Image (tube, rainbow, N blue to C red; front, side, top):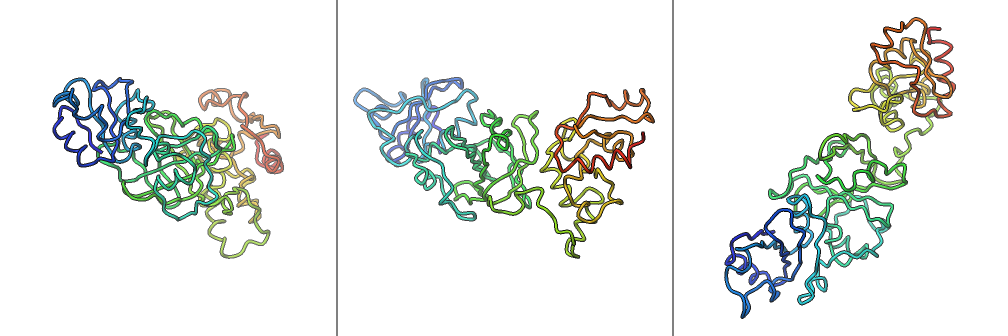
Length: 382
């Protein structure tokens, strides 16, 4: 992509060398709402009998040029906070009649013919989904209003001219910084409740094809930063076993699961991962970040059989102060989630630890009930 500002000769030379490219004409001022897209060589943006050098990029306007209109739109999203969309298409050169046409709101996003591990560029995806061109899916987050799919296009090594978001994959997790404007943040955060699915197309370097990585599951998000940062677990196919955080374990746990059982004693490994998927934040306060939360057994590890030690319903994700109080029997919870505070915990201690009778579990699963009853009867200091 090229940005021509006070450089008519290079601009006109570039257009002559790239007759099939696209040009967006916009005002130099950053808060402009004027964005008109043309085909390269359109008489409105080239030398004609009534125009000369100095009329194109050296007064009030600049020209944004690329073979990919989506690339131009991406640059505008990064560089101009007030940019919403290209406002007009030139009727003379009709840029949407060729490759890279403007978006089609009637397109249908489907993953029926998209294979995990397969490589795609945006042109192919736009064609598969019925868009007129790739511009409609040029953003890093594509969340069509008429679809239950949210699509992340993530590039680890970005063009130098674009904002350098810190996005990368480590093990089975995507670490991602959202867009500055955060248009789709709420939809991403509420995807699970709304029944939306989040899909990942990933590439290491710009101007290469994306690899479809499959489905994502949101693990944590920091909504108090700009842009929002989030951690997603890459779960691949909807048929993948680990999609279900509470798959029943066999009653006879074999030696191959010994490490999982040992890890569960200290709230680590698959046990903690399952608790994170089940609760996402503190089971009482809703607080995060995940790094400070403790995976706490309801029925103590020492009293459990192997299946109970790995059962995520025998666990709460708690802040450190709540975990310590719960583990030592100073607090417990009724079957409806209401907190019980031991008489052994003084009023002053409750005040200092910010423990109140208004606290309760944010939800109680039926499978929690027998474990909570055990805690009240055997652990809680009455």
